[in-house]
Image 1: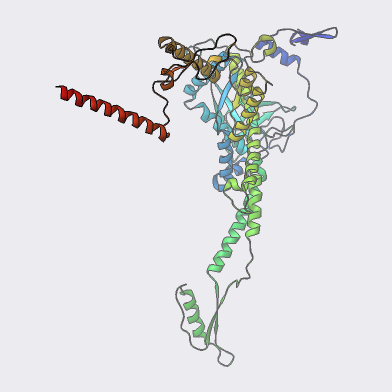
Image 2: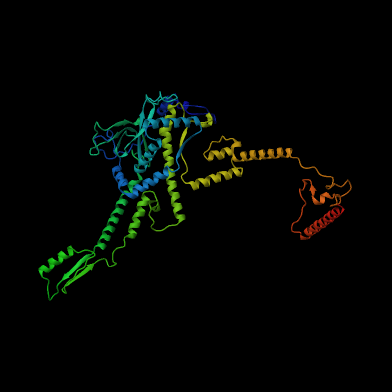
Length: 544
């Protein structure tokens, strides 16, 4: 089969014809053989501990045991590693894919692996990141087993009899790599005896197809990645040495040297006096004192404000250690040289950028080395071209934004584009990491429109049940044709006490309570009415 048969496109004249092509596992193996190119450069080989350089398992070029000791014994190194891991997994992660079924399948495989590994998958990922931050390398061994009878869908193993049941890590400081002259790994060995470089039967060996090697900053031609902690170990030792010197300086100042002078030129000291003085100094207590004769004189020799100020040297090496560990001094609790909020925010952003770069590499390594093989075993093809198939089976390991302030600013910027009619709602949701398929009625605007419709319907129903009061005959009458409306000219007497317009009649007279004159008129009318009623009652009594 020719190479062009594997490619998803072919040239026809000056045009490029795109065709649909899905690769099977057999096609992938054939493709790797077809596209194999002989390497011209040879892999770097360091000092060999055996007679043949190519037949030996190569140890790492860096002292991983020393790094492990520094992490376990030095507080700054330990806290820097912890800070990186905390930020790395601060906001969590998720699996995203255009094909929701493929993403659900990967999550289901992870659930089964958790039962087989008897540990959370997140704990396994955190352990991988711990190895990468400490040593710049992580070695994962694939554990295979017959899980097909327990899995709900069909599994098709790739290059093996059984599918992957789980993963486990090899201690990085014990791994040795056997590779060919072109830097291709052939086997991995775990050297369990650190006192010898000779292989033994107790040292387990795995073939290259069973081991996943994740690495950071691996130089061309080298077998191992470069740990960033290796270049700061000497600075840590120098800092600890300076701290020890300062401790000795403080100890010397707290316990000064006593100069005990006995005798004079005219009266030299007697031998027994010297022995007695030595005994007294040996038993001397800090809160005690001496009572001496006139020929004895004690002088305390101290720094007398002439000691060396080592604080600047100490701050310098603290900064060197912090920078070498990839953090700012204030991330480790150091407060020297002051600083303000603006500076600390910029330093925090620089640390976030460094963590995000590591997250990108980590996510791609997980996608290529773990997700792709799991997808092939489940019958999915992560190499399918999404522009042809409509949706891709490729699954991505996606970290959530660790800088919440930056995330809010980005989301507001995306929403502002939508408000200004620059992008569509589907593009907004994709940019925000959401599904583009959404029911518009479930959005806030849809719910608000539905509420307004319900309110309008309820008001119309209420108006139908309670029609407005019809206008009385004494209401304002419109002028006939050719006439103009005159105020108060066509109103009846009832309209004066209870005015009426197009909205109906008032329930009571529109009395201005602050009009004292109007109130006086009303009181006079009531008094006259009372007098009239009283006079009528007296007449009735007389008639009776």
